[in-house]
Image (cartoon, rainbow, N blue to C red; front, side, top):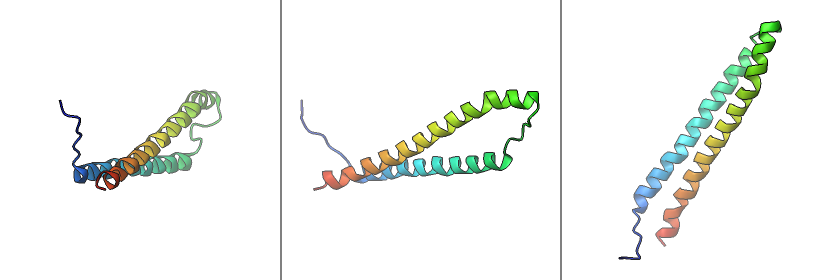
Length: 91
């Protein structure tokens, strides 16, 4: 059994850049979604049905947006950190 770990640093850097790019794409999509939802405003109205809809929609929507922001940041950060590994491994 060998105690060696071999890493193709070129491929690692390439894949890390892809993960980072995916984070940027999620962030871009989220910003577009945020803008569209802001432009629509409270389009469901203030009547009884509209208020019921808002009660069941607004908080979960905010939770999803918050989690998607975390996903985008996590992907970007992971890509950056993994992308820095070849710099250390090649020295």
